Each structure stands twice: as C-alpha cells, then as structure tokens.
Length: 477
Ligand code: SF4
Image (cartoon, rainbow, N blue to C red):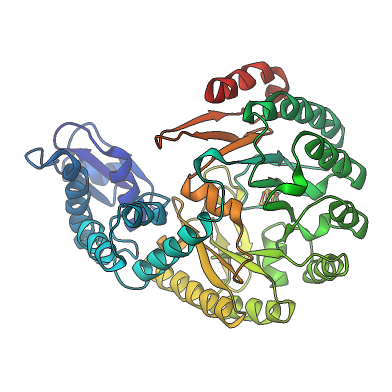
C-alpha cells in the first residue's frame, strides 16, 4: 500500500492518484492527513510514503497543472525505477488532446514536439496517437458535425456474468422475469426522449449492453421495431448491434437483425484459449465462437467486429499470438483490443481464481513491473496480428488500472471503422443514451459538454424514470 500526503493545499488529487496507480499498479493507495514517522509507516504496513509537492503558482495559469504533473512524474519515476509508456498523461482520451492541437492548425511535427515537452509522451505511443487522431479527423469530416447525434440503447442482461465484468449486467438465469418489464421501461424511455432530437437523423445507432442478443429473437425484433419506428434507421451511417457473447447468438436472431438495417455487429471471443475462457466464466467454448461467426457470415454480415482482451489470467504473449493466428482465417472487418482494466466491481478483483499455467491464484490485481513488459509484448503481438490482417488502428482510449499501463485500440479495415466508437471517444456529437446505467451526453456548438446519468439498478430504473427523463430534457430543451 502506498501512502501520500500533500505538503500544502490539496490540489490535482485525481492526477496524483492516477500517476501513483500507474507507477504502482495493484498496490492500492491511501491519502494521509499528515506525514508519518518511519515507525508509524511500518506499523501501518505502507511500502512507500510519498510527499506530494506544491504546484508552482508563479507559472502562467494554463501551465501550472502540467508542470505539477511532470514534477510528480519525475519523482515517482525515481521511486519506481521506471518510466510509463504514456508519460504523465493521465486522461482516458489522449487522441482528443492531439486532435484539438491539429484542429488549432498545428502540424503533426509540432503536435509531437508539444506532446513530448508537456506530457513526456514519446516513441511508439506518440506515433500511434497522432496517426489515430489524423485518421479520426478524416472520418469525422464525413459525419454531420456538432449538430449530429447518436442513439445508444443498453440491454443489461448477459447469458452469465464474466469474472472481469464491471458493467451493469444481470445474468439471464434467475432474471428472465425481469426482461419484459425492462423492455417496457426502455421503450417508454425511447418514446419520450428521441423526440428531444427534433427529427434530426442520427449518424449512428448502437445497441450495446450487457449482451443485446441475450434477448429472445422475438424480444430483439420488438426492440428493433421500436427503434425503427422512432428514427429513420435506414438513413443512419452505421447501425451496430453488439451481439457480444457467442453463446447468445442463433441463426434466428441473426435473421432478425438482418431484416432491419443493422450494418455492423460484434462477436467477441476475448481469447481463443479454452482454458482462459473457462477461468473467466465466459461459459462458452472456442467452437461456440466459431459457430456463431460462421452463422453471422452465412446470414450476410460483412462488417463484424471482434473484441479481444489482453492480460487475462494465465495468458502470455504466446497465447495472444496463438489467438490471433486462429482469428486470421476469419478475416474480421475490425478488431478491438482491450488491455484488461480491473475495476472494483469485478469478481476478478475480489475472488482468487484458479490460474492455469501460473500455478497460483490470480486475484485480478493489475500486473506490475515485470508484468508491464509482458503486457507490452502482448500489445505488440496484437498490433502485428492486426496489421497482418490488413487492419489499421483507428481509435484509442485508456482506463484506470489497465494492465501494463497500456490502452485499448480499435483496428479496422479502411472504411469499416466503428463510427460510434470514434464519436464516443472524441466527444464531437451528442449521444442520447437510454437504458439502465447509461450516460447521455450533450455536446453544444460552443464545445461545452453536459451529461445526464441513468441509474443502474433495474428497479430504480423503473422507479426513477421521470427523474431521468427530466435530466435529459434539461440537456436538450
Ligand atoms: S458479456 Fe460483457 S457485459 Fe456481459 S457479463 Fe461479460 S463482460 Fe459483462
């Protein structure tokens, strides 16, 4: 456990925590109200006590925070004995920062110099982030701009709960009787809120979750019917349904999706190592995934995304390479590579799971030191694998507590990039989100962004519907 205390006024605490957890992943940290003596620290079991410096207020206002972060980074770097791949950047949207600089007229070489100087970002990560921001800018220029919007509808049910999941998701088993009530609420929320967008055709529609295909074919059809009765779905640029779990996919459901203007689906194996799938509670086999994939191709889907997770328990770079080799013949149109981020809610963070190949329990703690280089090798393997399938990186985001301090990267064939993914990351348009636990975001022409949260629990979602609708109205009326 790392302890820290502020040597003066407490400021930029979120950034301090972000840097401590990046340098010492999995350690945990605690803020102290005052310094402790060595004996006290030993008694409390702290491995390190970090005195947070004072920001330099003599600097111009816009430089204070970044200068402070650089100093904290320099000190922590010495204490940890290593650097971070993303320098002192702690936010989840590095490409947004770069895009703003490009939009302000800076040349890529000037952007690179700025990112090096201000955030210590360099090398591979810098090139990746700049190339993605450039690609995104090009793609965004074909969309509607700030007056456009996207619709997100969430289905918080899954065939079973994966061990690493920190989303709002209820396993179908034991919750079947809640699905109809949820759909009734969701339809009501859709009816009441889509009109806030004043008849403008959305650029994209995304049905996510959970696992939307955990619904029955008939329920799925009613959901699509409802959405298509409210928005001209045949005119949108992208209509995604995250089929997600292979064990929820049937030929009948795919036929339903195909009978509506769904243009993109996602089928996610996460890994093609059966022993890992068993460990993480996916409750489906590699064969289930391959069968679902073939069914989707037979149904005529020509834009299928696949999600992979790096850093799963017991997996090495060799496992990632093997998974990619198995994926290659399937020729996915896009591949989203996530570095495992462990959040508090995830079972992996609470329960030791058997860890094949490691001979011990794995508690979901983020990998440290040595693990960082392993995570980095996996990321390189994934990047090379994606490249060999003709896929290019097109979006990127980071999360707290990510394995190896890395990033999530979306790769796609040219023209098959997930537009919604770019829009949600770059915050260029409003997102109207319906369903339990989802967040709507209004992006105003002056660049301001405001959010309206939906509550997470199913009962609360029903009970507090009017309150959530009122929050949405305040964003758009
Ligand atoms: S399929 Fe996704 S949303 Fe569902 S339990 Fe697994 S990780 Fe969570």
